[in-house]
Image: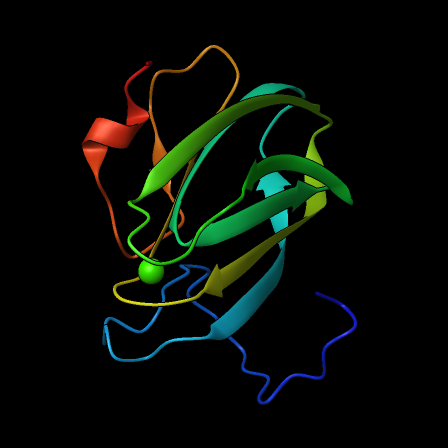
Length: 131
Ligand SMILES: [Ca+2]
């Protein structure tokens, strides 16, 4: 995505990602970048769900990638575990919307915890259950 020139750049101080809910808005992409503040060293779990496609990077590495979105593709999810040091860690989410409705869902939980934290406005608890 880095080869594209952004149409606009915005600051999102809430730290909560969201996409336009208007299904007539098609053929766009959004990239969010932030620092993820890991409260302690350990293994973190991230879940991403997207319609149409999305890529989650942590520390510059692709952790989750949902591909092959497009016309009539439903919301799909991917879960990944990653070992993090305590502190502020670079995180980015790239999102592409081709057609129809659009969604991005992102949540995480920390080491030895069952408590999920939402990083997206859209929240669907069913996506947090194991397959
Ligand atoms: Ca779509």
